[in-house]
Length: 267
Image (cartoon, rainbow, N blue to C red; front, side, top):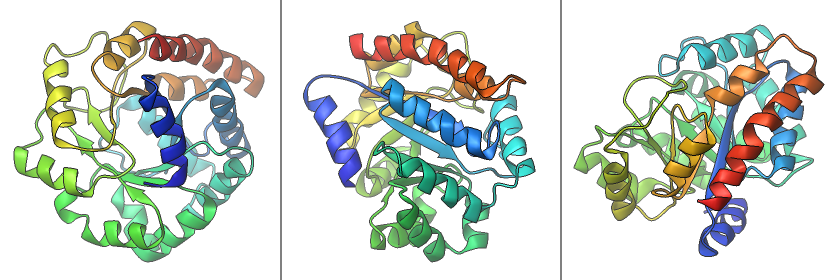
């Protein structure tokens, strides 16, 4: 496990605390502004940032994250630009950073080149949502050579054989999606979520966090009572898409995230 994961995650979990992970899109609302959003989240005390790589066909995402991907592309966030943004974030914080996205841009760029450049920029882990563990050999090997963790999604539909493979491969953390379908805020959580998380936690060594649709402190509390932490994405991303000056966007993010952080800490 990379040092930044070990120091941040290990210390908190060993003391009985829970993790709070935030997802944002690179280049949203603008290139410079996305760096400031990431740094604001780090200042608030978020434990990890999933920094989304813009992709033209983010078919696992709902309308909000799709709009963020489109905005990032419109703002010129290619992979070289993405890595420059990561370097700028890394220059000011040691928060764990996850390159989160889809396989097409990575394979077009070159898997080995991607892993090497990600490591140099300051990425700690890679999570590509459309690469199942059975097809991850090339990515996993390239990341391992460059000291980066690979991690994976689990879902209510994950079969036992895939969960066993994830248990052998996943490093950093395992991300359990709270429902099938695409990303996006939801009013309530599944009644089977506790059993699903217990099943995954029994199978894997890394921490298990839960995301997809969390948007209230109450949902964060519910998740943190059964998992090692919570992931909030669309609710934050929606605020970055507002047509407002950056200080107002950051204020809206603080208003959303601080009560969620308090909920995670109190779970």
